[in-house]
Image (cartoon, rainbow, N blue to C red):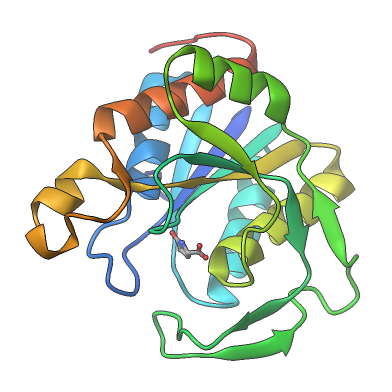
Length: 212
Ligand code: PCA
């Protein structure tokens, strides 16, 4: 994860910190591995707080002005990599964010478009992931919680700046399950496979494998 200051990079990868019952969040792990391994990738961890996630993402986008933005988030109900298609201009959930706030059917961007579609090459990414034996699929809803707030915010920024971007939901990793035997029946993926998935996505999107 990076600190303050002006920094230009071709790609911004974001993840989230812990939330709800998840004491760790593999989305920030994968984002930070990518910034360690790929040249021109900067990673940032965003807070699971309505409004603050949007604000921090926007300030990093303005600071970095990346050509490509890939945001990762955890979906504890899936066992595969989910490439999100659509971000909607709605936030609403009974589940409180990390500050205790609940939102009911409110816009993310009051004057913004209703929805944006990912501009990542989803089909090529899915082919590459599946070729590597990594379970992956499309998703037509990123929910209406903080992940969707970040997805919508990045797509709105990309539409205005000409950059491209998208959102990827990831499953829990096996180590999280091993540390909490009560969750043994929950879907998950090894952290090695998740990191491989992140590398594969970046390689397709950036068109190269620029390892440090
Ligand atoms: N997943 C949540 C928010 C943070 C995260 O990693 C979501 O799907 O909205």
